[in-house]
Length: 113
Image 1 (tube, one colour):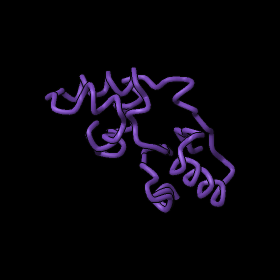
Image 2 (tube, helix red, strand yellow):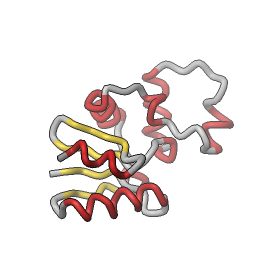
Image 3 (cartoon, one colour):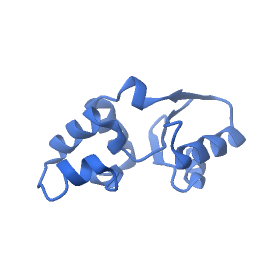
Image 4 (spheres, rainbow, N blue to C red):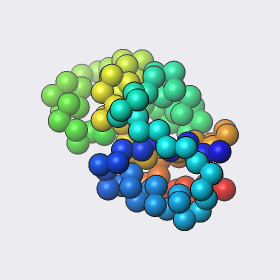
C-alpha cells in the first residue's frame, strides 16, 4: 500500500493525489498538517529517498525566511524544525515499501510501480 503525505490546500499535492488516483486506489492519505509528522518518520522517508532534509525543505515559506535562512542548522535541527512546522516540508511525499518519492512532477509517482 502507498502512503501519500498530502496537503489539501496545495496545488502540487492535489495534482499528485489526482495522478496517484489514476494509477491505483490502494493508498492511504495522511494529512500531515493536521496529524503532524515525527522526526523519526521524516528520517525514514529521507532514508528511503536517499536525500537530506534540505532536499525536501520549502525555502519559499515565510517561516523559513524568518527563522532558518542564513542559519547553519544541522540535519537534526532541520528535522526538528520540519516536524514542528510541517509547512516547511515539500509535498506530496509518497511511500511504498522501501521506496519514497517527492511527486514533483506527479509522474515521479511512477517510480512506485
